[in-house]
Figure 1: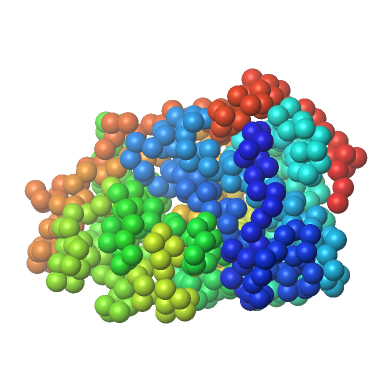
Figure 2 (figure 1 turned 120 degrees about the vertical axis):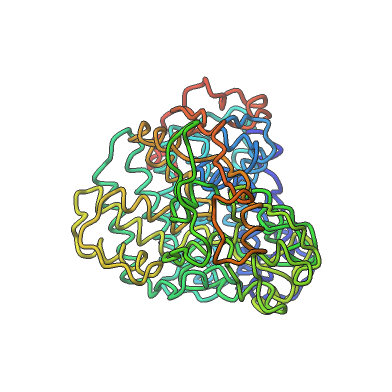
Length: 584
């Protein structure tokens, strides 16, 4: 790794991003005198929940959603599997993750010698390790074999930072587990209500790590699956947390710290850049908020994801692909609550967006200049819909939900990166892969997630992998996770992943704008998808992505390889005996 980025900012600004929780009195601090009280220790950890992660936001969406086929993003290299080591979002993603690891190690070491109570020191050190584990979890799933930097200060002192070798990914997973074990030893079991990581949050991550590690050898390991189920079940039974009753409420700012949120980037709006959530800019429709800088409407949920939600049906492949069914908003069977919370469609009105104007009406926003003075009369969504998750609305919405105003590319809306529903589905999958898909507790975990989304759905008494695979997609769509499901599955069933990705409808739909405008302006009883003004066709011309077995590992940034050839794609990784090499 390049020294400039891997070990960036050994000295950190402790008061720049600490106000998602109580702030101490600000003063001039350095690493020698800062950690002098319980309050200072807590404050000194707060920025790990936001600032070092800032430059991962675009990679989070482009890798997690665009590569997975959940989002259409024009000619993006993430859409057609042509990403190379100079891609700016890949570079920023990688450097952000290494920065998190560096900061976590530095703060962990500093707090270990703090003059504060042992209970608070343990809590804060546990949070550092939990975040370090999360960063490594993203790194190994994104880049495969990666170096392990246990103590960045020691590595800097040794001067061998440009000679580090990649470590076999199986060993990296073992290192993540070692790190989480220590985090769980340190973290309190009392349920956090302020958004901090507690014991059960780390345990939920542990369950997901074991589920992922289970296939890393090329075949599923039942001991790892059993561990995944064990940890997930303990979270389900003993964490004191429960699913939120209404799915869409998870993503509102007033619920930033809900039971559902186990790990989240907890952003702030203030004077210090990198402390804020900027995702609305990349994902929202132009003009969505008064502060401007919103340009994300020209990308959006993919045709394939919309089809998975039952919005319409595309028949055939290649040049024979045609839209078979596209119900009007008046007859669309929106039985899955997650659809509206994930993608905007004609007929949708959102009371929590533009609440000072009576709520956001999707079609009026596009076509009615009396309702929206910036209305362009042009649908931006390339597949006929726009994103909902990661949006907060306008300033009135931000104030109503979070008590403060938004800013330029700046929101305090939390970004949930591990939710309780995910842990429920991890448990269901780990049990099913062990041949226990008829176990009542596994079915109950699945049913709780599925029936929240579709209250009319009958409870199931037997699970298959395909059921859980689809449920994960619909439950977590837009949340930066789907590509990592493919990576996990590709460890032991790469052909199935390639086949599914190649069969996706990853291109745009033509003429949706004419269709929607005709519907908006017409006597809706006569609206018909096959009218001359609304003849929607699927763009099949470049539909099949060039995905291969190598596509499930991203390249290292070119600069890193130039500085350290040991991380080059043609250099084999080394094996490390983790338990006899590292300790905390």
